[in-house]
Amino acid sequence: MFGLGAIGLIIYAITIFDVVSSKFANQNDKLIWVIIVVLVPLLGTVLWFLIGRGKRI
Image 1 (tube, rainbow, N blue to C red):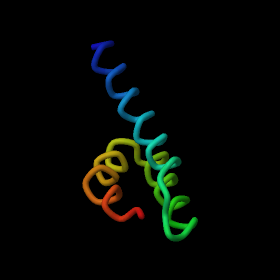
Image 2: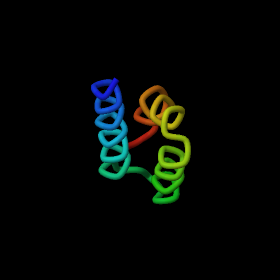
Image 3: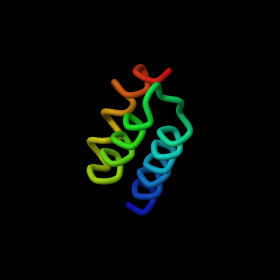
């Protein structure tokens, strides 16, 4: 079970890093994505990889 937790934590950290290092047309978009990923980790990560990465510039 520890291995699954570690993998989840790594994916979560990669998601936060990807959001912060992405370029957006508007800084508010970046702030909104960071808030979503931090407050709702599982859903925020899934949403980022499904729709968020395509919206960045």
